[in-house]
Amino acid sequence: MQPSIRFAFGPRNYRLMWLGLAVLAAGFITMMLDGADYGEGFLGLTLGPILLFVGFVIEFAAILVRHTPSELVPDAPVVAAAPFVASLKPAAPPVAPPAAAPTPPRPAKPAYKRPG
Image 1 (cartoon, rainbow, N blue to C red):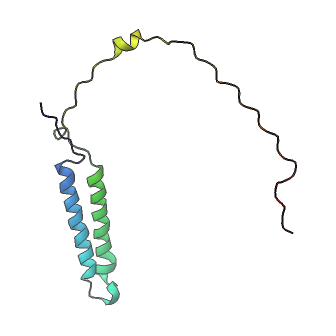
Image 2: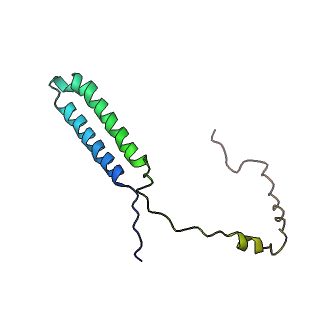
C-alpha cells in the first residue's frame, strides 16, 4: 500500500493565491499608470491602494481557508484505548515537593558607590 501524500494547501488555496497575485499586480500596474505628477491622481492614490488591499486580503484568505471534506484524505482509524487505560494503576503515591531553599540575607549597603 502506497502512503498518501498530504499537502498543506489544496487546489482551491492555490487558485486563490494566483487570484490574489493577479489583483496585487493589477494594483501596482494601476498605480504606475497614473498620469498625474508623482502619482497623485485618482489611480495612484485611490484605486491602486484599494486593489492592493483587496489582493492582500485574498492572499490571507488563501492561506487561512480550509480544505473541503472531499479534498481531504481520510486518516487512519483511531483505536480506543479504554481497556489499556483501565488496567493502569499508579505505581506509588505522589511525593510532596522538597521545601524551598532559604534565601540569603540582603546586604545592608549597595555594592556600588554612587558618583557624586
